[in-house]
Length: 203
Image (tube, rainbow, N blue to C red; front, side, top):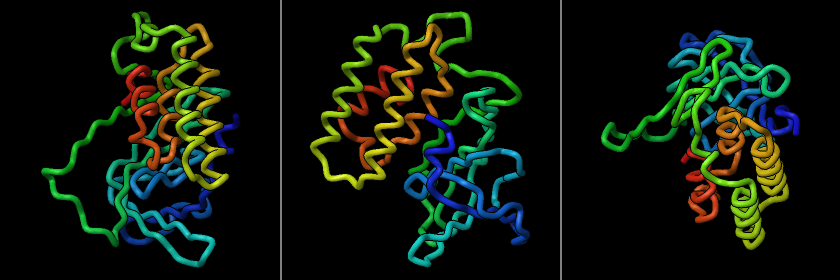
């Protein structure tokens, strides 16, 4: 599954003085809280503005809270941003309601939530069969819900990529985390999705 196939939105990035940084960049806007870009070959900083033009002519505007540049993996996932944003038309959350957990990767480093590269990772506690059953449970639960075809395609592609990665001798946590982040937020609270995230050590 090409990384770019999940990028169904177009955004333009402006600095705090409204100077254009880049326009018509392919991206995936996740519920107005997370924006994942196709590439990372431009600068994004805290406070920058993101403009997303919708097919119906409306324009959404977001302010960057955390740029979160991701180094990516050569030949698999290009360098990109996983920007935490806020809709500037929406009321800002109070500090008491904000919980931030983020990991920044620089250079060619890889990250693991529970360990370093040469140790036993969370997902190694489960067999591939157990993961396949967990993925099947997500598919079964999603099948019973009313989703647009484009959302179903995103879910299908993400789950297939997760399964492919888990079949590798050393599954990469960054790829798994990215694939999970592409799952629509509308299914984030499903029991099967929560269970899968816990097994992967991501949720």
